[in-house]
Amino acid sequence: MVQEALQNFQATQGSSAEFFVHFLHSLFQHPIAALTDGNVLVVVECALLLGIALMVSVIEIF
Image (tube, rainbow, N blue to C red; front, side, top):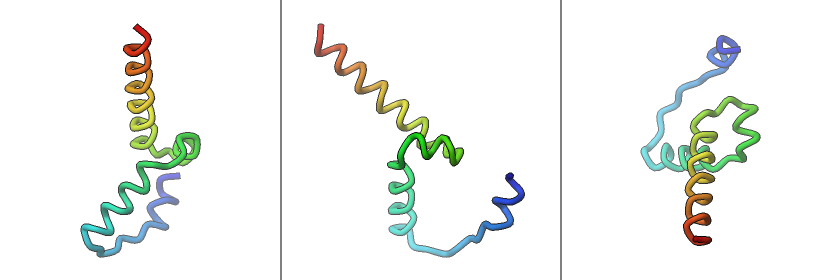
């Protein structure tokens, strides 16, 4: 699986603005799609946001 992904990998030269646009776009993917694609960063981000939302809602209840 990794070898197949590395064979299709192509590095490109881009500006820092393009990098941040791509980085932010990849952060806000659907969590289930990220799980199936193996994108750990998105899964961790969704877990953190869900945890923060739950803590804020629990604090507001009490």
